[in-house]
Each structure stands twice: as C-alpha cells, then as structure tokens.
Length: 140
Image 1 (cartoon, rainbow, N blue to C red):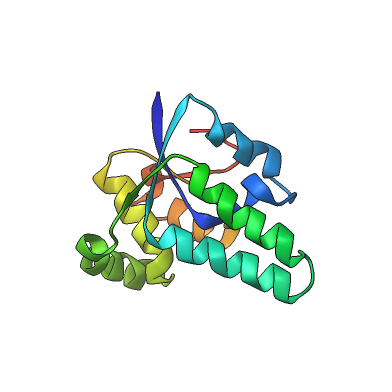
Image 2 (image 1 turned 60 degrees about the vertical axis):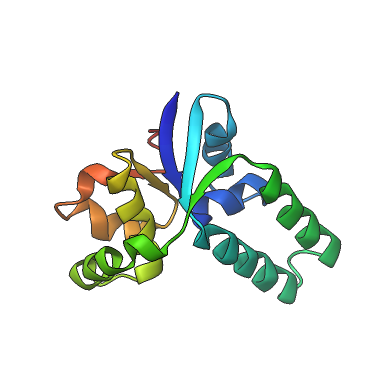
C-alpha cells in the first residue's frame, strides 16, 4: 500500500466532476493510505460552500459532499506541530502556509503529496522540495 498526502484540490475532485476527477479517484482505492493535515476538512468545506453560494451545487449536493468526505478513511494530523516549518516553507516558496502544511506533512511521513493545484505544484517542483510533490495525473 502506498501512503500519500492528499490536499483539498484532490479531495474535492472525489465528489465534484471536474478536470482531473478521474485521476483523483485513483487515490480512493485500496492501494493508497491517505494522510492529510486536519485543515483538509475546513478547506474542503470552504470549496463546497463557495460552489453552493455560486449555485454550482444545490444545498443537498453540498451537504452530501460534506457527509461523503467523512466516510473516506484519511489519517488526519493536527496542523499545530508542523506550523513553524510550514511557515518557513511558505516564505521560501512564496505560497500559503495552508499549502505548505500538506508538503511538510508529506516530508515528515516520507511520502509524496498529491495535488491538483497547478500553481503550488509549479512552485514546489522547481525547489529543493520537488521530491515531496506529485501532480495528480502522474500517480504516486
């Protein structure tokens, strides 16, 4: 079984049809052990809220996506122990601490972070942390 850190950009694609949704669904099968900082749930919820607010999802669809995420086995880790390191990574990459938390968790667990966030991926792939990140279409 492969261990991967998944970010909210991947998790959203499990429940909403988008570009790269098919690739994201690979990470739901039994070949993967999913890990994430606990902020995944807040980020996921915020994306769902935005989609419902823009009427891209009905309230029922939004609630179903939120319920469905709870059923996915994800080893969630508190963000607090990784916060200072994530801050330093965020400063280095000029990206958010939110995004850096996923990357730092992946580094701590010696596994790749999988993302569908192109801007973050491109910032990391050209840095010394490149070995810690995988594009959603590339596989783990």
